[in-house]
Image 1 (tube, one colour):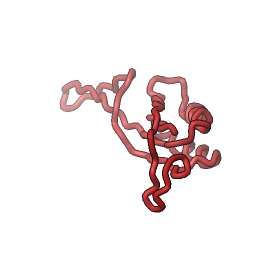
Image 2 (image 1 turned 90 degrees about the horizontal axis):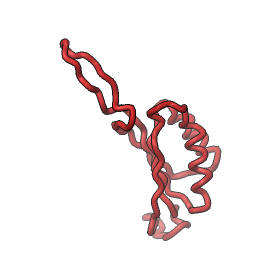
Image 3 (image 1 turned 60 degrees about the vertical axis):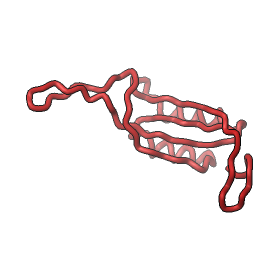
Length: 112
């Protein structure tokens, strides 16, 4: 099992949710976050003072999936989120040791 964490532009969220649902990907956690990467934000002026606004709104998705589904999910995320501009986001993939469904106490891949 793997955990896929993707940080994307907020305006890509709805399209990505629809594409993942069409691919039968369920169990998505979504959070609104602030962050910066290579684009380093932008400069604004407040009361004649220059202020660097370096935290930009982003959306973070977390999906836990079977190993065999990871490449398909990553391909969907890239195809929707990629604009070719700085600030498209990142995808992180990590191993999951165990998954337990609380309601039924199922463990492993069947609990996803």
